[in-house]
Image 1 (cartoon, rainbow over the protein chains, first blue to last red):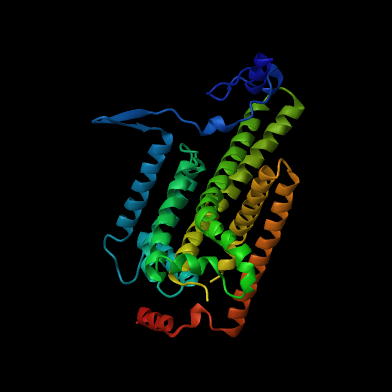
Image 2: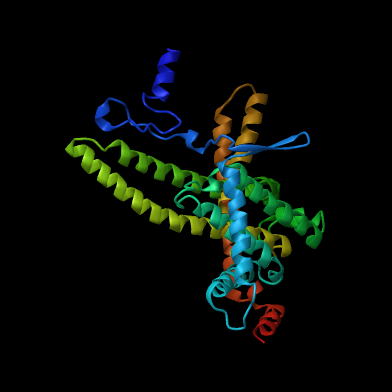
Amino acid sequence: MFAEVVSASAPAGVSASGGLNCHLMSGCGFPAPGAEIFLFEDIFTLQLASLEFGFSKVTVLLLLGVVLIVGFFTYAFRKPKLVPRGAQNVGEVGYVFIRDGIAKETIGHGGEKFVPFLFSFFFFVWILNFFGILPGAQLPATSIFAIPVAFALIVYFTWVPLGMIKQGPIKFFTNMMFPPGVPKAMYVLLAPIELISNILVRPFTHAVRLFANMFAGHLLLATFSIAAFYLISASVIGILGSVASFAVTVALTGFEAFIQALQAYIFTLLAAVYIGSALHAEH
Amino acid sequence: MDNAAWTISSRMIAGIALYAGIGWVISLWWGNRPALIAIGAFIGLGLSYYLIFTGLAREERARQVGSGVHHDPQDAETDRKDRT
């Protein structure tokens, strides 16, 4: 019984290498990708005193993202000109987009101070997402749950202390729990919902929204690319299916490019919404 | 500030989870009555809808009155400084 389950979950020809010898007519089932495509072995480890740091593909992509972002914006603003050209132009468009499109629009008064914070988040999340369709990388680093969780926690530990400073440590929570325009008697039922939704559920949905989108997108791309490869065989249905799967992979790659930018925008926008709610209590 | 729209999902999760949880605790206390969990979830759903709609209505009113955050004079001041 147990052997059957094991063999069902790992059909013949499937291995960590992705089952390269597995095709339609070679008598093996479709090697559908599962959660294992998000697991990576350490490439190398770094020993510092008694601490051991493992570097997997994900860690390398994170570092690469940092290097790319810092490198690009240092290059763009190395000699700022009054009339921006080239890379500086791109950098300024990005900055103005975050400042006017997110910070001023969502936070309102007092949002200017948070432009660098939101700007860094937007471009870092975007490049990590973009690694999903970058040939060679082909893994959105944000599809590893720990990374969006870390980002969401940074945002969480920014807006909660900020709200406690701006509105007062107790007032911050009472402002949150007692929204205006509700009959007094209803507060008994509604205040706990508001508290849980703001303090516990917010950081969770913030992280899950980014993670789930990138995870699902990567899984879709992997499924259709493996299908295109698997269906190559000397049969009409195999060739047709392979071509169709390849076309879907190309279309999904374009779609993912859009989703990656959109999710980076939504993540940043939500960070701005949370910071805004800490700065200004609802009246 | 379209805050209320972004809090819909977290309010629904919080409402359902909280009242289903209360229902579960009561069902343990009264001796295994799992229907209370479902009743709790529905009550939570209803209350979170109530919160969502009052929140959205409040923002809509603020927008119509035009006294929202966008129009406070300090913002106009910073805008002017930026342009010069």
